Image 1 (cartoon, helix red, strand yellow):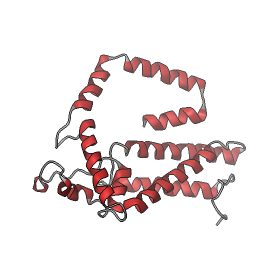
Image 2 (image 1 turned 45 degrees about the horizontal axis):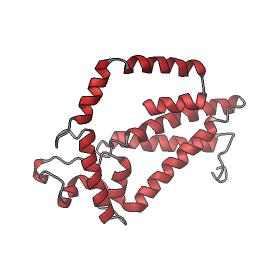
Image 3 (image 1 turned 90 degrees about the vertical axis):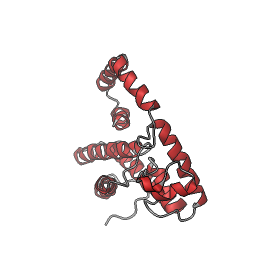
Image 4 (image 1 turned 30 degrees about the vertical axis):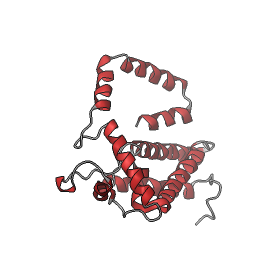
Amino acid sequence: MGLAYLYILFRRRSFSLVLGTAILAFLLLSLDFFSRIIAVRTMETSLRDPSLLGRLVLWSYAWKVGRENWLLGVGWHNFGYVKYFYGFPGAPADGIRYHAHNAFLEFFTGLGVPGLVAFVWLSTRSILGLDRLARSGSGRSAGDMSVTALSLNAGIVAFLSHNLVDTTVWHYGTFLFLGVLLGLALSAERLSPVRPIGLGSQC
């Protein structure tokens, strides 16, 4: 959510919004309470609670699994099961089947390089297309679409940035929400009076 908010600040360039955000951030960071919470959550890690350091372990094994199965992967959502065969600490019988805690690594391990490339391409294309619409706010219809594009892009940025340290493949409803956002992004591009470059002919 923080990165999505920063994207909105960058795109809108509102001085009052930037000033208010800077003051609020300074006040929050000056409190010891928040810094202690961040420090504790950063260092706390175990097999049942993979915080930041635990995620580094998961990411290293995800990279190992993906590298050894780079063409087709090990199957969607299977990293949690097969990582034990690559030396991940713990036993499969324990029922601790953590995923990669990174959506990009999850695509890489599950679907190989083709799956990762497809995911990155679709996400990047949607973000760049919506950003172009967000900058084209001339005229009433274009202005309305600019606000819509800005909102959708903020949602995609929030989702993908969160999935850099987590991934929602295990929660199908949340994961499908990304599909909804990407579908709305494509629809916004199709319906916009200002067409992004390379979109193709209007349906």
